Each structure stands twice: as structure tokens, then as C-alpha cells.
Image 1 (cartoon, one colour):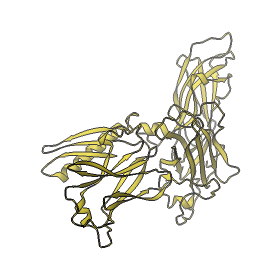
Image 2 (cartoon, one colour):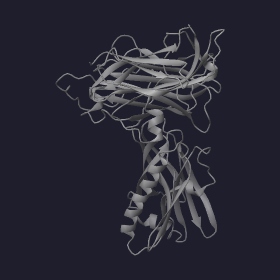
Image 3 (spheres, rainbow, N blue to C red):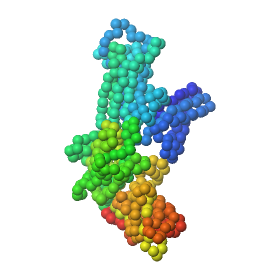
Image 4 (cartoon, rainbow, N blue to C red):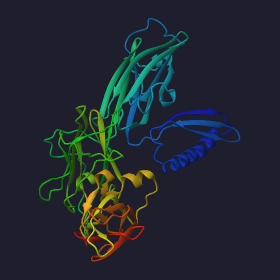
Length: 484
């Protein structure tokens, strides 16, 4: 979100702005390659032969779109001309002061700046003005948006009003702020494309209704893959969560991808604040896909995310949402859940298996930790964001939670079934550490790192990833299911 641009005049401002815009986009694209630039004030200085601009902006990690319209209503007669030296300035800022400090003017967005007498003159006989301005603003999903109106005069600044909008519900909201003998009407509409409404728990149909689309002809298997679900709090760092994430695909009973009781003490948040997901038990093709989330912070009793999303032939509409990386925000009063997923137009179900061996004649067990992650061969992962959140983690354990694996047994994967687009292969990334768990066989810790690629239909194919010293080996295999 670009907050401020300070301009030094140029002979051809339009041409300058076009070239500068390209430079800004290039700078932002380069920043996307690193992890720590999100939600921070960034500065870009753009120079030319005849001008210079300093651009202040921030890249919001998970944002929702807000459309703002401002009107001025003159409620009472001033009994004369309104003061000519008074200006009305309406600004917007983020409510999450932890990430966006309120003492920095560069985090404010100026929505309106006009002399008060100009506003009064624009009103009609009923005291209602025309639409003064409208803006599209990116708002962090883990923040509210605060709109503030101030009057500025030679004697100083006076606050007229301040309203706060929270994106818990999609839809339109209206607030009024008193300004001398009138008021500013603020209308804000949250874009419902990536923020999903909070719904009662007994609601059976989610999402807006659009004209039905006929099922395409031919043999194909549409499947949904949920890669990761990230949890964010508003103005605080979430340390523990409880609740459920479950999926209903219309094929049998709903199943849980996450379930934790309030009193449970095991860790369910990974280092990047994503949930430790299980399953799914199956990936049903050509089905309605409903995901329901109810997540709380048990320590503080806060509601982080409650609601859900649904994809089917009706809500997808003319296939524009197929085969895209989707990021859906499901809000709560005190935070949000961000669901990273893709609806593949035509996909195949794959079950991944990882056996672990001591590379020798003895039956040596092992303690194993690290990660097994899958990605797609024909998909590009150009940014750190895509690499982190749009891959499926099959196994992810810290050293203190190491898995005990007997020789020839499977590594206990938390997820093993994935959807693979038909035009792609499946690549398994291995980054494991192993050490002996058997008495009498003490070996130093060994790293197993590498990747294996599997093409659709290649049953009975396995790939071995061997440790750096050749002590341990993991054997990867894939069984292809529905869609082959």
C-alpha cells in the first residue's frame, strides 16, 4: 500500500509517473524474495532529469480490500459564510499499532483535504453534497481501519471525529463524524472476494449465489488442496490456539484437519504461525468443498477465527478460480486465519510413503526430525511467500519432538494424501536429521537432504535419499489413486 509520494515538479509529470511506477513495481518484486519486509515502512527515491519523488509504502502480508466513499452533509445554516481559513482533512490509518505505529505520519493515508467553505458550497438545497472522493485501501487482515476527521486552522488542529472499521464481516458499513454545523458520512465496503463472512454454526450454505455453471464435458477430476493455514492476532503475537478445522466434501462424514481441546498442551503452531495440519483422509473429486474454522486463544479467551468457505460449481463461476493460488481470510474478533489453497480443474490423488533404513546389516532404529515437503514440478515458486505457504508439509518435527522409527518402518507423516494437477509431476523435498536410537549402535547425527520427482501413473517407483555419510537412507514412493 503506497501511503505517501513527495514530488519535486517535472516538465512532464505524466511521463515521469509512468516510469516511476515501473521502478516501484520492480523494487517491490525484488523485496518479495525475502521474508522480513512485510508490514514495515519502506522508502523508494525515484530520480529523473527534471524531478524526484520519495515514495513511502508498506507491503501488507495478508490484506483485504476496502472501498471508501466520503460525503459532506451541511446540517445547519452557518448564519453567514463559513470560515475560509479552515481546512477539513480526513485520514485513514491501521488500528494495529504494534506493526503500524500511530506516531508515524507516513503510515497515514490522506483521503480528503479541502477548505471548509468549498465543502459547504458543494451541498444542495437539502444540505447533501455530491460524492467528494472514493478510495480503494488495502487493510491488513490482522488490523482494523481507523478513519479520522480533523479541522485545521491558523489557531491549530481540532479533532472532529474518529471511527473504526473492523473487517470481521464482509459488506457495507456507514459512520458519521460531526464537523461544526455538518457531518462527514463515511461509507466503507469490504471486498468479499477474499474475506469470508462469519456465519452461524448451523449455516449449511456458505458463499454468495451466482448463476449456475454447467459441468464441463469429458473426464476430469476437480480437486482441492489446502496447503497451509496461518493464524494471526490483532495487536499481539499468538502463542497457543485451540479449536477445530474440518472439511465436508459430501463423500462420507466430515473429517478434521485440525482439532485441539482447550486443555491440551501439545504444540500445534509451527514457527511461522501455521497450524499443524493433519490429513486429509481423502480428496473427493468433483465435489462441494466446505471448510469450517473455529479457532480461539485458550490463554486469553480470544476469538481468532470463526467461519468458513465453500467452493463448488455454483460459487466457482465460469472456472476463473481454477488452478490459481488462493489466499482466503476468515476473520474473528481478535484475529484471523489465512487459508492457502488451490482448486485444481483436473487432478490426481497421490499417497506418499517414506520408509527409513539404517544402511547396513544391523537392525538399527533411529530418532528422526526435520521436514518432508511436496511441490509441483510445472509450478513456479518465485517468491519466499509462495515457497513458505503454497507447499504441502507432510512431516515437520523439531529435535525435541523427534520421531522414533524402527528400521524399515514408515516415517509417521502427518499428511500423506495430496492432490496433483494432471499436467504436473510431484516433487518431494527431503530435509531430515537422524541419529541412532538403538543401544550398542551410537552414530553421530546425520543429515539427509535431497528431492525426488514422481510422474503421474508411475506406481512401483521409488527414490532413495541417502545421508551425507551413507549411514541412513529414506525410501520415497507414491501410490496414485483417483484420476489416474
